[in-house]
Length: 442
Image (tube, rainbow, N blue to C red; front, side, top):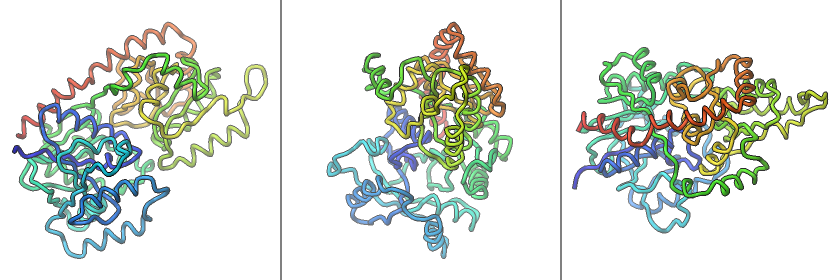
């Protein structure tokens, strides 16, 4: 039997996934299509049994729906520190079985289809602390030796006796340090260790590649931009336009009569300026914000509350109710998000910094006009298929919202350009780029 490729999939083990989870799912599907058998590695916050892999699976699902943090930050660091009394030679993974006992397979859609699933308790926090203390990556010993190890996010771990590949999505914790809770020292040292020891470093945009090469000492030929792939789920493609419109109507919305933002409510998404700019544009169409609460969401919620207490005044001199202008929908199934994007007047996405910008690409693939920032990776992703604005200037955002709201011809033109631009990031092209990376190592 040919040795498998081991995928680090920390974000696949989250019941509410992130953009990195989408990347990991796409990567896994692509590698299977290339003919590789895959094993999966992730971390847990509960103790894993050495000889009862089916019990590990039950614990994983049991913890998935717990409210609030599973353990406090202080307890997490204390537990991690306990492991560092003696430098470990290697951390051995424990198997997390995939049985038919758990009936609901929808909780972790990305955790299926792997040869072996394995986990290590608090792996990534332990790896960060190990790197800070001993100055080297933490060695992981998987259940079986892989032919290649691919980490889907920067992680201070390594697997011996095979090529090690790391995907770096962005340098946001360093470029916008005040907008994340990441341990900046650990993040910087992790990227430095990856620059020194990785066989290949994969980025998801030219902007991220330039950032990495500029701030870290690494040969250019070891840092490769593969972009990301965008595709629509088969179950979504099988649905009719009427079905999608009814789904939108269930939220009290009319197709083409609302704007949409998709992303977590966190500072780097620039929602405070977007709200100011949208209200200043004076559109009759509501803004729908789709996303779960992220770090720093409190300021965004406070802003919404302030506007609600002192609502804007319309042209007729009457107050405009905020509940009719700005609607927040929390985490939704992916197909519902796609329906909201496809039927929107435009996607508003003036994020301050993105490694790639998947919502903008999904909107273009669906033929929805896009307003995005002219910073980081977004110009290369959106190209000439959307309106680019200065994300730090609410007036620039306001003008773009007014333009796209009032110019029907422009919206029709952008609807045509979007799918053409999105085709540059098709699964086929992503497969070609990943094939080139892997062929150079195996």
